[in-house]
Length: 415
Image (cartoon, rainbow, N blue to C red; front, side):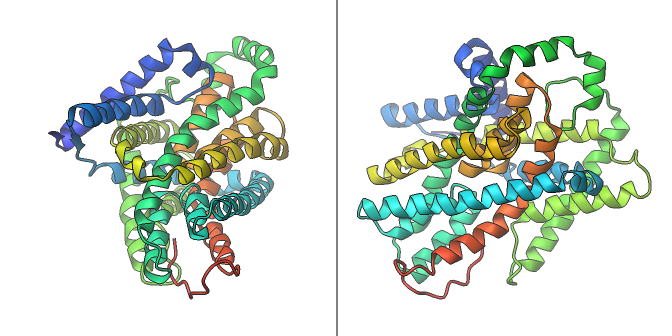
């Protein structure tokens, strides 16, 4: 076995990102279907480690202590990029997209529970392979897995939840790009002309912080230092708030609290001066932390643990991925405009509907880099995927647990 310390892990994460860029550039199919570079590189490393483990009994261990801080840095920059005035301008889109997401949560759990019952499995397994892990992620999966084990007597619920969430993280990064490519295939000539005729200088000024991460941006060391300071303040205060709420019925994940501290800082400072939040430096900090987080999360996947998933569970998750793609194509895209914005919304929805909000942003970046900017989607999707979905998901899960097919136990845990 070889173990990488925190510094070695960071080096490997950076090399994984560079590998992902090379792979996407060299394999036309990956570029065509807008697979994010961190996903391509991370999965290649993960599968290489799987082969080493399976055939040579050689294990690679990473020190992922920086994975959570990188995730929190990303969500802090999302908050620092969210202005209330901009949010109000996209308020109707926010409400509509939230309704689209809520409907899918209901369908996602219905598919999971229905398939579990049809396959002769405990319907609780259907919920674990539904919105608990696919839309909720590892954190929500761990919380509800503990509930199902202790209050419902469901053995190995937490292990199954972690496996489902891991599987979903992979699928979320693989499905979004092809869905957007399929939706925009007829608009390719038109979009290519728009890109060719656009002026780089004008485009650079109009691109929002996270839409095109590889576009050059002029910043200063002072602006970067100010941004890092605000990011760290957001993380520190958000962590304190999350800890204070952890013992109450208003408990929220740390990343949600960090995001909203960033929102408060942004809007409080904007009352003083419009120039305090420097979007270009926010974009750099956010994109670097996002890329490193995804690379670290994917390259450290223990894919051999997915063997613990029974064949029926794999069937459920595969069907869930198909339903997510179909829903994004026929519902999300249609409702959100049947245009470039709608396609970016669809790619983002696939990202957090199967995986997590960072995956959604990576999907959206891959699409906007290829097809053009979508400020509306980059304003709405992170807010819904990082905050509203956690609150709504709890309600949907608890309503499902009231159905007569489940034991009537008073569930008190949150997500």
